[in-house]
Length: 154
Image (cartoon, rainbow, N blue to C red; front, top):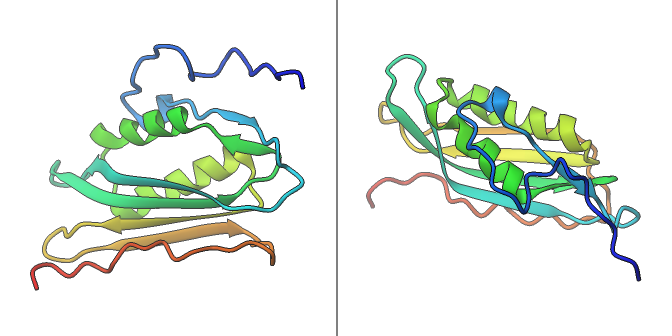
């Protein structure tokens, strides 16, 4: 079987600059070799950081991104660079979580996508943010995201 060549515009396999803000980050997609099959892809970003737009203090989250691909797959190196671009980005938890979900959906046009943003406490209150788009195919198994609710000590 002949190996398909990937677009030369991909960041995969070459040194690239770390983007300093989400608008500058490039999300790459690659053809889905199993486009006729429904299946789930999960990305976990347990050390997501952004900046509070009011105080300038760092915010931390555990992101879970699940999607059922259509014609495209999200390339993981580009996702890593995109997620890292939020480290100096000032936005509320809700905005960051939904922004990431919408950007990924726009780039890869999945059949279904959900993102869970499990944020660590700010002002003593943890904030969890969930967003999804598309219709989940009936034949796809979607496991629980597996992130326990914040319990603090005890």
